Image (cartoon, rainbow, N blue to C red; front, side, top):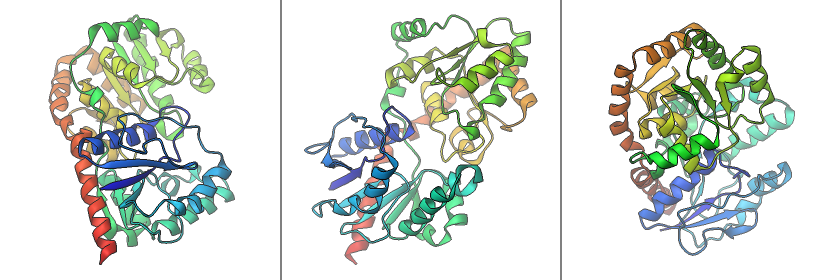
Length: 370
């Protein structure tokens, strides 16, 4: 099978989108699928055979993004079996080849604060109209599927649920030397080490975590909070100073995957207070590594973490304080959950997830042939 993968929306640094695309390419390559990346400069990046890496491209300008999603994608050559658009976009026309669209979340339709102006509202109206021309859609969790049924009920019968995958690098034994080297590079010195990986926009709810940890650190005189990717986030650094725990926190720049894996391995506890997710990749990565997890109790994260971590109300500072304090005071039970969770996380391996995508591609091509 020949698959065209739309990589036009990749950023200038590694985000969840890049992790998803690279993991999918890796899994499809293992399944013998021929993948070509297509984007604003046409067929590129993966022209002859699937690569197990991803060349990260500059984030498109609004104009370039608009042009590609409205017109450019229509020029994808017809000798592919299927076009996979791994983000929520589709032109308002049926393309010459079958299309599969991944729906990661419906944040703009669920959270009004993410529809800032008329221009954005018009764009999301275009997305809504365009999705109706997709042959198949993939929701990355049952929670996202439930949102889709609520927001776009007429699309549900063309949508299947396939969870996100976790890259193979997050599985396997600890490289002690590597973990120690990365910890020293970022100035990590204290134990217990509490790790946060994720974004810093409003829904990620990091301020609640900081307030809770400020109370925990009043009792726990050792230990540190590691905030990955927050080095240039002035609001977060200001809050750390206001709460009096700036000296107990390490803020890193964006890290590559090798560094991220090492940071997970060096952590004693992983925390994730997000209010809304389509899936929850960082908790899945933490489970794969075997780090104890405390996360916000939201539908998608509940699916990912299940009984293998502790779930608390996202905005309840006291609940977060208690959960973190208990984890530090009595770590044995949580570590047992983490050990069980590491076995459970095998279901997120991309080798298995890609087989589900291959099935969807086949459904899309068969449906177009009828």
